Length: 286
Ligand code: PDD
Image (tube, rainbow, N blue to C red; front, side, top):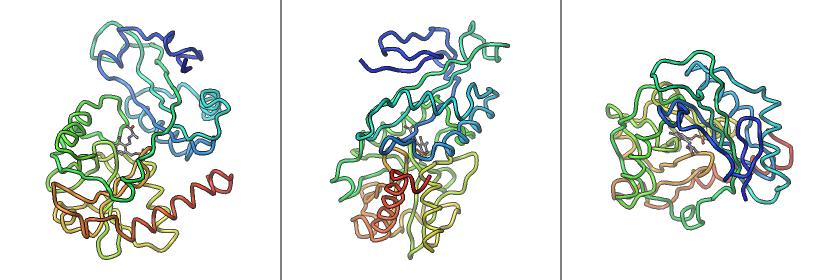
């Protein structure tokens, strides 16, 4: 039986109980993080914890734990499993109170976390790339908060699946924001372009790492609005996330992207990313 962390206890998942009056259940009033674990080490933990701080501050919740306490909780959830890559899911909701939209005073947040094996993209997806569709970005204006209320994202991802694609590329006022559960990079004439941070995208940890790696290796990388025309004429398009890493998108709305195959810039960036990951596993990078 899988063990989970709930409000200070480690217990089998079938014994973990949350009230039906939890505001996470009633209102989707909470935030979350997904942290990959490579070689038994929490990848970019300080970055995830600082994004968690930003999400909590945005919804007026105090962080219930210090970085050291989070580390202890996650490490216990991971156990001694150092061979299999995993991911930690962490969710904090405002807590339990009679239903009322306004914040109830003095309630205790509900804190829930668990570890699970990381499901990598199958090799053929990396070799051939995946299909995506474009869709109107119907979400709200605080997409920078990693909120658990993901109905719009779920509808958009399902819209993609129903059209035989892996991801929806979201477009707001003619500009690409991000994917339903990923950030988007476009490659044009040897330059990377990705949306600037702001209220319309989640500041992805993988996105930031790709930007960092590009700059460290003199690969031109702009954080600028990606117009839909730029997406349509791109040489390469990638999606990035903690669980999908850097995945080429080779068809958009049924049309090939560039040559229709993963491009040379993806090969280069993915090699650099894997090098970084290897150094991290060996304790030579954080
Ligand atoms: N989602 N944008 C959205 C809307 C996302 O949901 C995610 C990740 C990202 C990429 O962020 P990061 O690189 O930090 O994983 C961007 C996670 C993996 C999820 O909801 O499962």
